[in-house]
Structures are given as C-alpha cells and as structure tokens.
Length: 599
Image (tube, rainbow, N blue to C red; front, side, top):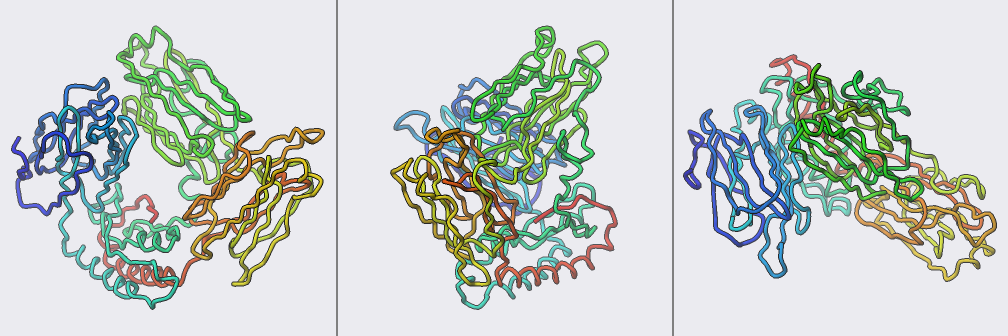
C-alpha cells in the first residue's frame, strides 16, 4: 500500500484531522480511498493493532497491520459499503504502564447507520471526532507495540448547484443574526456558520441537503434546540410530544402497540424476571446468536441477581466460539432506555428455530454493542421520556429465543409519601436560589423563584425544631443559579427510614442538583433508596412540591420549556424563512415520504 497517496481514482477535496494519542511508535498513513469497507481490531488492555480494508475504485484494498502482536480479543467491523460509511470515531488514550507513552486504550466507530463498540478499556483522555456532511476515507497514525495514535483523512461531498443555492440562502440568514446588538444575553453567543447533512434513507440523493447548523449557537446560549425539522422533501415535522417513540414503546405499563416480545415466540419456554427499581448489570454470552443473558437488578438499594436465561450446553457447543460481555451501569444515574437487535432462524438446528442473533443496549449516557451477528429481522425498542426499563422477560431454550421489557413510569413524588403533609410552591418562570439545611437527612428546603423578573421567596418546608435537634450538627447550603441562563435540569438523591424517630418514617436523606452548567452536591447522607429525576430535552424545573413534617419527607417537580432568549427567537424566525424558500426549490424534485429528523 502506498503510504499517504490518493488511491481514490481522482482529485478529491480532503482534509486531515488528528492524530489523537501518544508520540511513541512510528508514523503510518494508509492514504486516501473511496471509502472504508472493513476494520479489524485486536485489543485487550488497549488497542493492540488495526487493519483496514478500503475501497479502491470498486475493489477491496487491505492495509498493513498497524500496531503490535498482542491482544486477546478481535473485533471485525463490516460496513455495507457503499451505502454505509464511517462518520465518527471516539475513544480514550493514556499510558498502559507507569511512565510510558500514551497509547489508544479504546475505540468506538459510528457509521451513518450503526455504532460499533466501544472496544478496549475506556480509561484516560477521551476524544471524539465526527464528520458533518462527509465521510472518513483513510486512516493514519502511529504504531509500535500498540496502536499509539490515530488520525483521519476526511472527504467532504462536492457542492453542486443546488447545494450552493441552499448555502447562499443560509449564509444570508447567518449574516442577519451573527452580529446581534451587544447585550448580556448575546455576550457569550457566537454563531458558527457550519453545515450538516440531513440524511433520509428512503429518498433520492436530493434528500441529503444542507441545512443551517444552529446547534452551536443554541449551545452557547445554554438552550437545548426545540425545533423539530423533517426532511425538506416531505415537510413532515414531528410536533407530537412523544414523537416517533410512541409506536416503539412496549411492556406491561405502556399503552403502545409494540409487540410483547421480540424474537421467536413459539419455541423454548417463557421466563420473566419481574419488576425492580432498576438495572445494575447485564451479562451476555454470544456467538453466532445470543447464547444467554443474566441480569442483576436493584431493589431498595440492594443487588438482586437474576437467573441465567438460555445457555444450554447442547446449544452452546454448536454456537462456538463464544464471547462474554459484561455491561455495568452507573446506577442510579444511568439507566436503560433502548434495546435493539436482530432475530431469525438458526440453520444448524433441525427446524431452524427463530432466536435472537444480536443485541445492542442504550442507556441515557452510553451505547453497548452490538453483540452477536447482525442478520435477520431487525427490531428497536425505545422508552418514552421519563420512563426506563426495570425488568426483562422473554422465551428461552438452548439459546435466548425472545426478549421483552417491564417499564417504570416516573413517580409523582420521590421519598416518603405517607408521612408529613403535602406542600406545593406552584409554577414559576424559573429558579434563582435553593437553600438546604441537612445533617443525617434533609432537614429543610427553601427556594427563591423568578416570576416576570421579580424574586418570589418560597416558604421553608421541613425544619421543625423538634426534629432538627435530633440529627445535629446541621449544615446550611445555598445554591445560587446564574438565572436566566442557568436552570435546573436534574435532581437525584436517596430516601429511607430515620431510626431515631419511633416508626422510622421515610424521609429524604440526600439531594443533588444538576443545572445545564454545573452540579451541586450531593448534600446529606447517601444511603437508602436512590432516585433520579431528569427533565426532557429542552425543559427545566420551574417549581417544587412534596411532603414535609419534622424533615423534608418527599420532593416532586413542575417542569416547563426552557426560556427562549431574544437571539434564539431571531434565529428561529430567520431559519424558517430560509426553510420555506428552500422547500420551494426542493419539493418538486421528489415526492417520496421519509423519516422525520430532529435538529
């Protein structure tokens, strides 16, 4: 392979990004190609080596192996080229031995369709590289005993006449909002005139058109984007609160039309782990299909290990070689929100029974997998906002035939729901300050709100002298938000019985508050039953409620959309004007319906 050469068969507009990692080993550069077909990684405590198969004018071209001879696990990533291409790579790098040079510890690859990994150990300095409106067409880096560093050749699609007309329209918009009057609300807002592609898999190439990238602007203003934009060609915006998730949710506590189980529903026998407070760990054994699954749950703060489902010896012998995957969630802050995979018949057993061939798990923070072989009928299960997966069920025999889910709806209050009396501060424009008094539990809370620019101080809830004297020393904490740019988006904590009072009433033992900028706490004692409340994207907490007696027994929340600052309103107005003119250009080119996409 000619190092650093253009093997794509023509002149191409490319840029080089990276490398990320250490300075050890020797430089290598695979050069430029039409695209990436396959990637083979060997890894253990770090990424030991990488081999890439590229496309060179319609034919595969295999690179040299970059890195060393170590590693005890191998991952093969096969893209459905040319329809599937790499758009993002992320990972971690740091030394594997004290005083050594940094090497690549983990890698995760994302195509325009799927996510592969992470592979290796997620330790050290994280990095993320994403292509907007292009694809990765070559890799470079440094290698010695391990993969020391990695970088990329990136190809951006040429801008045709239609693209240039679209781009000109959006640049005109950018010029109207990139220089707003200098005010406090625009001091930190910088408009970056970047472009991204909206991909619609069901339409012609005209569906991949340029749209204005307002996410950077909104992030600078600490506002979550609230515009729901469909593909330009079909103008189908998603304005339903539950969005496309409505048809994909399932489980006993959901009113959706999703199937009860995904996979083979006739073979094997049924199993049901039941309903718990949450999921802590998942252990998978897999080969050509999902051999078995075992889940560890949480109930009242204690670990409960479920039975192994599947994994019969007679079936496992036919499914070799087998691999293990252990998924450990950062419970209670991390929880499952989606499971996807494939299922179909296995031809090595008489009758070709339908079983699960692959599984991928997605939490509110990370993605794990896919594990197994991605062949057969695909499925995706995703919960609605405010819901999480708290139990598994399915069918199993020699293997894991099918899988289903139990869901938990968001409770009205967190904590003791029988002691004390109810209180409700009401709904305001936002929160300015929070004052907590805490010791061995949360003694009291007092909140200062904003209403039409005026400070409104709420009452103190809890803090009875008779109770306060029993759990001294007490600490007072004041949380002052940079309102209106900073607002509360999440509250977590613990609750349990207090043994120094007859009957051990359940009260809040700890609280932690998270804004769109910072985290405050935890305050109190982190024991008992954990809970996590997080608003939907674009929302904020605008009022508190709960129960209180001697202490703060329980807490609940009122939520509302985050405020739209003046600059954001001007951007949105200009964006829609450009959008409407763009539709007039694009709509006659195609009438194919497509899947809606959110910005």
